[in-house]
Amino acid sequence: MELIKLEDVKQFVGIPVEIAIQDEEGGDQSPAVKKTVKKVQLCPDRTHIRFYFDDYYFLAVPLASNVSQSEEHWSASNPESGLTYTVKKVQVL
Image 1 (cartoon, rainbow, N blue to C red):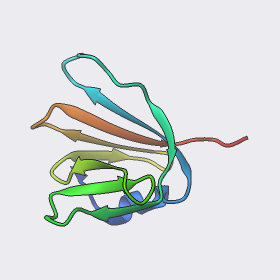
Image 2: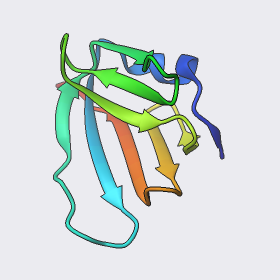
Image 3: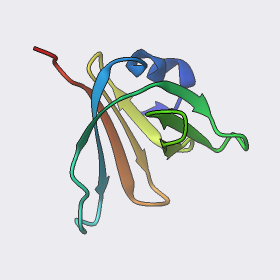
């Protein structure tokens, strides 16, 4: 696993994705949502990467997370919070 790199997540800009946040302790889970990523950028204090869905709403993932990725899937696990953020490309028929 490696740390988050902005270049690695730019592949998701402009395409439909499914986003999920999971708790390692098995607590209440939010459902996965389908969104289109409008842009990806660092937050002003450079501690998180932001996945924007429009001009205002975004998902912030800590840069200190451990990343695993493939062509269709990107996942970041943050040991401090115990959360895993997953972004998967969605097949459009």
